[in-house]
Image (tube, rainbow, N blue to C red; front, top):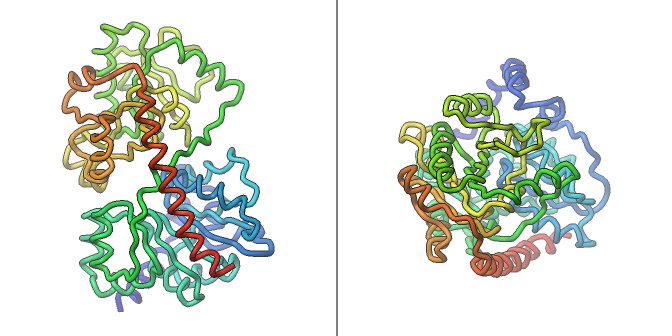
Length: 422
């Protein structure tokens, strides 16, 4: 009954989809390819042979699975690797990675018609969903087609659990379709058990795996060679009010460090003009990453208004403040809990600073705290006092060793399901 209501609601949304599409296209959240593919009209050929399918919602999930993809690129038994995602920014990640077998498509609308059409065309040997991607219609279609369904690096927050638990019987019926789930933390494992997932195995968080795929063109090399002359403070995945927090930290740091540039990487680049105006009011000289101006002299704030480039700046960072951690409670509730994943900047040797709201990554921060990589800050003064300008590569090596172990375990586990089918 619940599934019928769910599909009916999807059908109603489809009726109004032309209006929604126009709006999202106007907001630069869709293009002609994403619209076409979301209605299960493929833009690329499948080809012959075995195909495995990975699905992640957005940038973070797609980046986390790249080391695994690279391993399967070398597997002769796998002829094609399909990656699906839901956002334009995530679709751009694969373009510069020089992957030969791997193609990207946008994830289809979760209606039984489009789910079946998608599977009939791509015919994957295994379906590997990442983190919180639970889709009732697609899961049912996958099961009907007898395709192994894997939930990799599963992540269920308290808020997500509460939402699913309101329709407990329906949720159990959907989660039961998962052949095996690999939770990224103990909290998720507990929630998966409550939803009666029959096969759960802990192998670690794949975001600990080293993933160094950032590349520089000639213009970038010129820019990043300039950064070497400066001390840098990075504020990443920032939300509203956190850019001002970073700017005020910059003002304090600048009193003792004249050759300082603060790099702000907002979570949503659509807010860039707003952020630039805030910096102007604070009388800080600002330049955008997309600007033709590539000279850093006399610059206070460098705003990254491009997709998928965080890693390039983490490489040069010595301290990174992670956003969505010091915003007010009302905004926090709307954003689904506090914290952003600190593992990527930590892997490059940066010290991680964060506010008090990190519920979404408690276990990750517990590990980083044990290595003295991360620190909580409650004010601009604490943030400035906690900022350092030197990397600790010994701690990086410990994280890399953990990442290698998790990658080995993950490949071993996935191979069991994949090899049984190909």
